[in-house]
Length: 215
Image (cartoon, rainbow, N blue to C red; front, side, top):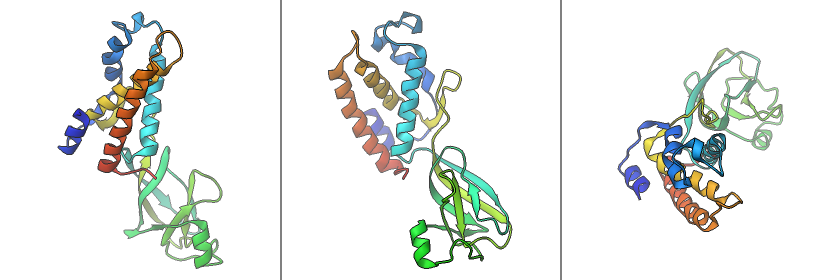
């Protein structure tokens, strides 16, 4: 399998043109180009590609980003970066912050919501899913540095490039074809979709072994 071989060789070339992947697989759908497609639309194929991107983001550690957040004294709660899935590493003023649950902090310090000192931990804020909270509450300004797994921007004809290794083209080819052939109608090929599903599952195992998981 090409994907397995190249990943084992350590080939990691960023910048995948998902639009080109879609264009190359159109003959497998019985057409020479978008205008010849009978059972699918261009936007539909891009939607399938975006669903695969979101699936990869949830199930593997392929998409990682860095961000900084300005911290102010006496304010423990901050917005997470856009499209954040999970935090890989957090630090404040060079000191690593360990992740903890609200239950763990409650067991550590019954007054943890009001305790003020140099932050040592982060937790998801109880005020919203898109926020984090520092514990203890900071007593000085600083900069919070985050490394995190994220969802990439939506794939569309206007945004066809994905920051991913070129070898991932094979994954998208199989994934889009599987979903296209799963669609009910005269062009449905459920046995082909099932076969491609097995290939995708194997590929995802390799991807997780190579890049880890997102959560």
